[in-house]
Length: 162
Image 1 (tube, one colour):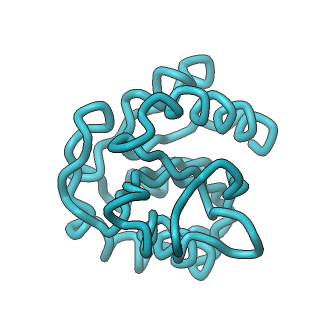
Image 2: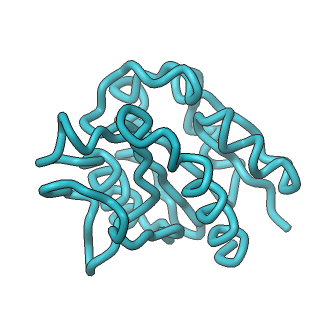
């Protein structure tokens, strides 16, 4: 089994402790970090804000996005979760997750962990493709009671896709 890297998400890393993932903060990540892993899990917010819920850590994606944009993901399996707010950002719910997913696929990566939009309420999202979210949306602002179940289901799904 290959080593797994999770870029952000202490909460998710705890749920995957049997796979012994490395937790790498986006603020400290480099091209070398991306190159070391065959399987990567990224976390990103709805519209790319640089502040995140404390459960997921503080992140500034603006500094890491140029690295992602130029990295060759060929041969890498990548899953994404997106923090979103389906009330305030109903018309662009987890859009950055979609932007990141398409960039990874464009750069040769294999995207894992697509999720049905069933059970989510929102108006529009760039993270939808072919009737599925391109990763796992999480709304800690208005649906924190659903986060743990959603993460548990997603982790089980990812185990089958890895």
